[in-house]
Image (cartoon, rainbow, N blue to C red; front, side, top):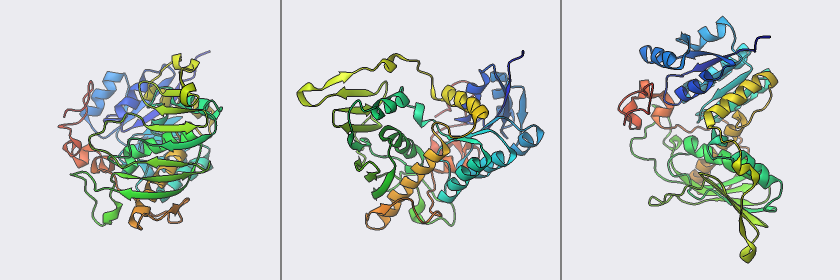
Length: 367
């Protein structure tokens, strides 16, 4: 009997990040991949390079032909909301997008809620696989190997942006602690040079560095120190338990069992396990989720929670650093990311983020 082929659409697959999704799906023998991108010659070059036979200009053509099993929408933030909703309404079984998932919190809510209503698995980003063995380490901590957690931190702070890279670390913190954020006390710093707001946006809505304190549901506090310009801190998340500590960093997490003179490095068996990259991992779980449905690892819900925490940090900073409780009553709050994230390189200009041109078939975009 012939092996089932999953129909997979990669929307924005000729972009800087989308090409990585395109490559991950294209190398799977169980996937029939369709590239959806308006990049013209560049899209056709990427399709030829990865052996993709079908190239379409827009999402409507993908959804009205034969509804795919999986669609990864690797698009500028301004287009993500509409694309995810269209896929869910069309009956796509597994959907993914990239970070940040939305500008406005209500749009993140709509995506998460509609996908649940339609029974579509909804994933976002690659945070769970950006540190090797992160998922296994979180499970190991949850099993009690360092005892009940007492403290947590994001040691390097959130030095550039909240809704982009910052949401990655906030998502990883939720996974490692297994806790939700109940309250926030926040401070912000001015955005980096070159960051702009669209016409009509309020000044306080721009993305920026931030720091503060997060009260977690387990009764502990996660400290986010102010970013230090001279510091190169690789640790994404740190936790301390009654009987040990864990640093979440590359090339592997650092685990310590015991306290004081009895403390010692720990090397669980899963440290020698398979290390599959983030894009192969997300492709594998989306294909599987198209069969099973429901929630997935590194989900839209996870990134919605991270976006809400980011918005709460900014809201607290605007209100004299007063404690802000979650969930936020005002779902119309917004964070506008860097113009490249908001509009994409073809519209915002590749130079807006430091590139001299669009991505090439091989190698990184030129800087």
